[in-house]
Image (cartoon, rainbow, N blue to C red; front, side, top):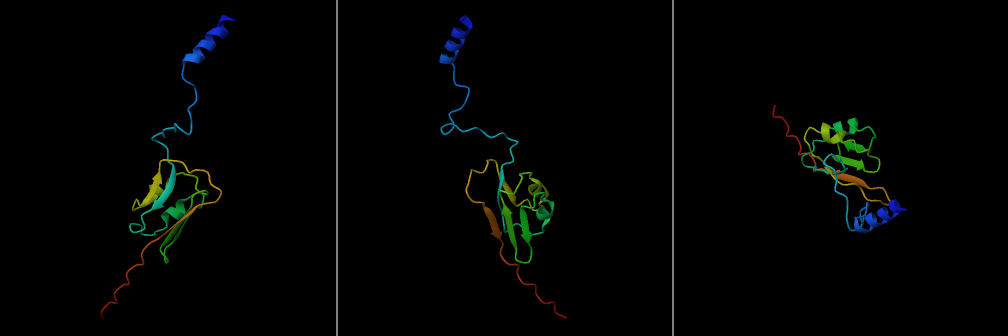
Amino acid sequence: MFDMIGNILKNLVSKPATRAYPFKTREMNENVRGYISGIDPEACIYCGICDKKCPSDAIKVDKPNRTWTIENYRCIVCGECVIVCPKQCIYMEKTHLTSSTQKDIIVCKGSPKPPKEAANA
């Protein structure tokens, strides 16, 4: 009986064990990878290494058209594409995606390559 009264008094004066979610958000751990938020299309050389290394096949690189596409809901957030990118132009946000009713697809299109000058023979 005294144990129960002690627990009641302790709960009345202590803070709650949970956080008040909409008003107080959880701080992200420094090791959280988050999600891929985009790419710098001007720095990207469209080599396709990120496409080849992606285990979930979420990234598509089209070198002739200079386009880069990612399906964020197909991505397993391994971060392999960010690690293998030779130009380090893929960015990850240290947050999580919010719930959605439709799948988001990020498409980045780079500027066309300048034409090669004809060699004078």
